[in-house]
Amino acid sequence: MSLLPRGQAPLPLRPSQEPYEPAHAMLVKAADLNVPGAANYFRGLLGSDSGRLVTSIDPKVVARFCRVDADVLAHASPVFEGVIVSLMGQRFRRRDYAISERRWCPSCLAENGSHRTWWDLTHVTSCPRHGMLLHDACACGAKTRWARSASLVACRCGRWLKDTPAKRPAWIDCGFDSYLIDRFLGHARRPVPWLDELPMFDVIDTVRIVGEFVLDPFQEKGFANTVEGRHQLMAAGFRTITEFPTTIEATLAGIYSTRSQKLQAPHRMHSKEFRVWLTTGDETPMKKTIRRAIRRWTIRHAPGIGGYDVPYGYFALRHAGYLCDYSPDALLVVLRHKRPKAWNQPVGMERIDPETMAWLVRHVGGRIGEEHVAAELDVAYRELTPLRRDGLIDTFVRATGAVYGFFSPDEPDRLVRKLLKLRDGDFATDARTMPMPVAARELNVPVAKLINAIFEGRLRVAGTSKRATGLSRIRIDLDAAAELSLPSW
Ligand SMILES: [Zn+2]
Ligand SMILES: [Zn+2]
Image 1 (cartoon, rainbow, N blue to C red):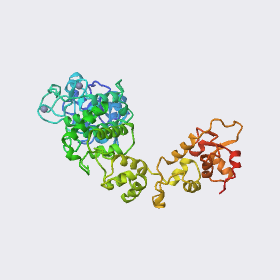
Image 2 (image 1 turned 90 degrees about the horizontal axis):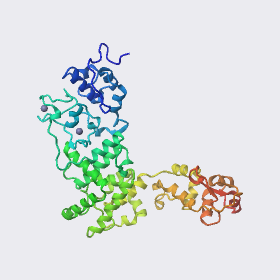
Image 3 (image 1 turned 60 degrees about the vertical axis):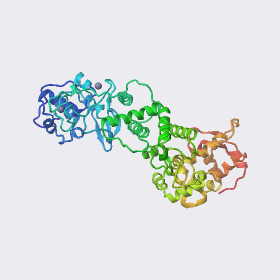
Image 4 (image 1 turned 180 degrees about the vertical axis):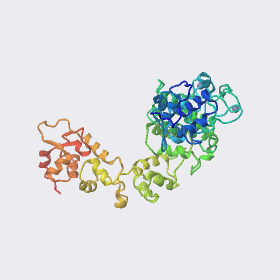
């Protein structure tokens, strides 16, 4: 059965097909070949919405209409799902995919007149193969757009797009485009450990945010949405990451030599997005290393800067509360108890330094409740009260009572690790060992009492179970525990 609308026959002339051509480009190319200028008419014929060629065209229908391989075409075509665009097996944010702006490399077009699907990624701004910037307009000044595309290779003014003079400014740097395209196509390339571990959409965000910090640390310029602006931004971000820490240090040196007045408290102007990125979200080795490098450089080179003064801005208490999804007043209580050093700063808590912010996000923003702690420890809910009372697990801010009673997400694991370290290798093999929570049930004593006995040296960790979770990983000798005659429930 034909997928084409009733009464429509496939085109007579079959276009060539490259593995990197998306359906919208194929349709325009096929029109060039069969009925020049008819791309928009064909779009309507195939049931795609006016002005929405890229997002509403169906690759299966285009393949049938143009008589090209449907699977190859679908693979190179974008799939839109909410805020995500999937393209050739990779996921991108919708905002990082251009649906109207059409960009192209004149030399690539000259080679075979085919569109490369990665040119539609907003942050691909150059062609590493030909070492030139991508164009988004004809020499006559008319912007190339998908919606009004009359031809893939010519402008309405009659000029061939392939003849547009190449743009090779002195600052061109195809490093990022090269990385993105090679990774996208699965080509061999030099590893970039910090980026290789991130999904593609995160790579784009990360490089952009870092690039903005080194090019425009006070967020004064803003980068116009031009191919050139985006190119400089992404190239700078990529260089900063691959040549770490040289570029970051040069940025800091520049700030301290010429802009030091900008660094006076409360330090609000430093790239907000960079600051938030550096201290929130998933903690990665990259963020940790960048934070440390900035702090180290600052303490060494910037006069009068103390350990808590770092040059990438402070968080207002309100903003901190927002980032942790927690009341600002309650955050003050947390800080007073847990980070007295940060609390005692002269300017007070309207100024939260980035390291403290990272800590708050980790422990307060990621806080867990009692049920969660019990589940992770693999114990019954009622075990929590004795565990808390004996100080074995720390309700985040003990002194403040029940209102702020939550746990850091690290808390269950911290206790288990502490016990695992006490593992005694020389236990007798004939001992009756069992997981600690089971032993506690057997003896009708709280788990907390067994743990205390271990910390006091009266009971040994007789073994561990790798496959169990929480306190069930700890095995103890039931008979030895029974002899202690611990207070039962
Ligand atoms: Zn090219
Ligand atoms: Zn033109």
